[in-house]
Length: 210
Image 1 (cartoon, rainbow, N blue to C red):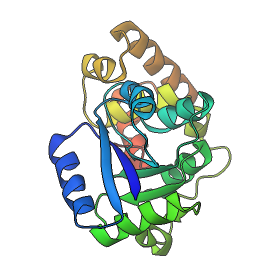
Image 2: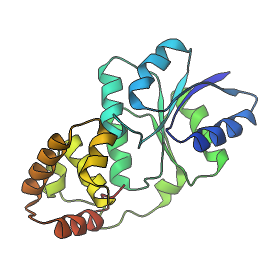
Image 3: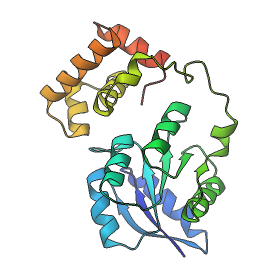
Image 4: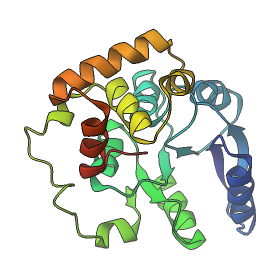
């Protein structure tokens, strides 16, 4: 039996995932986490074979969370379940230590196949992502300015591009508003941008929105 720990901050999503898993005879849900900070404790408390991880949760999340788990010595297989289908984000998640990547628009059968293959020691990428041609914006040149952003700076940029006030971004990332403002100032310097309108256009052009 494959034991899955689900990490997603939306109750409806977690419920739907558990219903999908309940249709199988070889997979079961053994725990839930709603914030990145809860995951290490849940892993220690339950005997899970796989972490099914949403990329966008409150607090520590995304690439930074995957790296944190790996740096902490947690070797549990990670299958990312995300609304993002950009090739660059998929690549970064896998390089950070994820073992597979499935989009939330996939059919249940794809998710279940991903769970089985990742727990079996294989890497799994949603077939829809493998078949999708990478656009010019996804084939970023090595010198693209946003590639120099830190993970926090990128998260702040994504929040700004999604229309979130700095206070909301600070709460989501568990940072002070002053720290978020500092990250914003630094990322704008790195991108060579001095106003919010150009910052938003840059984020949309390079598909850096949430």
